[in-house]
Image 1 (cartoon, rainbow, N blue to C red):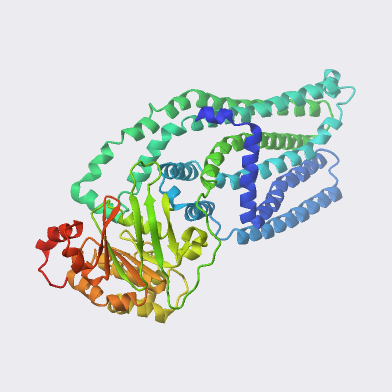
Image 2: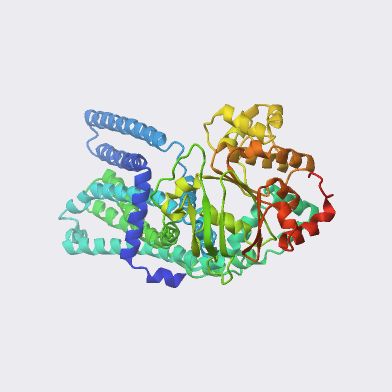
Length: 628
C-alpha cells in the first residue's frame, strides 16, 4: 500500500480533494459557508484581546494616562462584545444548518445509494464487497475518505485565519528599529538579519508538520496488516448483539473463540508492525516534531526580547509579538499539516471513489412500460442461457417458455437447479448471457429499468422487515393507504394478529428503534411479507417458499385463499414442498440449469421424469390426496 501512495502525484491528490470538497459543498453548501464565517470570528477574537492587552500594558508601563486607559478599555469591551455577539449569531446559524447532519450518516447513505444504483451483479462480486468493506473500515476506524473533508476544511480555515491574523499583528515588529545607542543590538535592524531570521523560522515551521506527516504515513504503510484485525474486531464486537448468532454462542459456548484472537494480537499487539513503527520511525518523528516546535518558540522569544531590550518597543508589545508570532507559526504549521493530511487522505479518497465510480454496464432502457388495468402482460423466455460472472458453468441453459396471463406457475427442482437464477433474470437483476426475455413482445432491456421492476412483487425466502410500523412495512413507505393495508393483511391471514397489537397498524415492530416494539414470529413475518407484496399491486407476484415458516394449518389457510391473494395477477412459486404444486396451473421442473419438464401436477406424475422422482421421494411425508 505504501508503494501505491508513493505513486500518487500531487496533481492527482489535489484533484481528489477538490472533487471530494465539491461533493460535500453540493450536498451541504450553507454548512460550509457558516463554518467559514464562524471560523473567521472565532479565530480573530483572541487577536483582538491580544492587541488591546498590549496597548494597555504599554500605557501602564509608560505615561499611564487615565483618560487613554479608560478609552482603550471601553473600546476593548465594545469590540469584544460585538464580536462575541456576532460569533454567537453565526454559531446559532451554523447549528441550525447542521441540525441532524451526521457526517458518517451521509457517508453511509452515499454508499447505500451507490449499492442501490449499481448493477446488481456488481453488488454480489467479491471485489465489490471487499472494496466496500475497506472503505467503511477507513471511514469508521480512521475517519478517512470523504468524511475527512469537512474536518480538513475546518482545520484549513483555522490555520489560514491564524496565519493572516498573526501576520497582521507582527508586521510592525520588523518595522520598529532598535535604538541607535543600543550597541551590538543594532545589528537586528539589518535587512540580512531579518531575512535570516525569517528563513530560519520558516524552515523550523515547515519541518515540524513534515515530521508529523512522516509519522502519520506509518499508518498507511500498515493498512494492509490492520485490515484483518479490524474485521475480527467488527465480527466479535457485534457477535452478541445479533440475535441469531447470540443464541448459538450461548448454547454452544462459542465464547471460547474469543481466546483465539491471534490476528488481532499480530496486527495490534506489542510485536505488531505498527507497534514497531511507534517505537521507531513514527515515535521519533512525532517527538522530533514537538522538539522542533519548541525550538521555534525559543527563537521567537529571543528575537522579540532582544528588540525590546534595544528599545524598539515597550513591554506590552512583547506580549503582542510573541503571541502573534506563536499564532502565526501555529497557523503556518497547521496549513502545511493540512496539506500533508490531504495528501494522506487522497489515498483513501481514491479508494472510496473507485467504489463510487463502479460503472453501470446494464442498459437502463427508455421505453415506458404500458400501464394496463387488466394486467394483461405476457413474458417470454426465448432460448435464455446464463452464466454468473467469473464462473465457467452455466446456471441456466436454453430455457424457452411463455407465461399465460393470470396463470399460477410453480418452479420446482433441487437446490442449485436454477430456480432462483430464473427469478433474478425475470426481475432483471441480471441480463441473460444468451437469448432474450420479452415483455409483451419487447426485449425487457429496452424498458426503463425502474418501471420494469415495478411490474413485479417478490417475497424472497431470505426477506427482511424493518423496525418500523406494521403499516409502513406493508406499504414500504412512511405514508400509506390504511384501508388497503388492512385488506392486504386480511388476505394474507395476518389481520387477527394486528388487531391484538397495542397500536394496530401503527405498532412498531422489533425493539431496534423503540422499547415498545413488538416481536413477531417467523411465520407472522412471512404473512406480513406476503401482505407487502400484495400492497404493491404489481402484475406479477413471485413467492419464494411462501409457506416455509408456516405451520401446516397456516399453510393450508394460505393455499385455500390462493385465488383471493393472487387475484388477477400472474403468480410464480418456488417451492420444495411438491404437495403445494397441486394448487398451481402449470409446473416447471428445473434440473442442472435446464428446464426438463413442464405441465400440470397430474400430467407430470403420469410421466417418467424428474418431477415424479421428486414427488415419490417426498411421498412418505404426506398421504395421497390429502391436503397439506
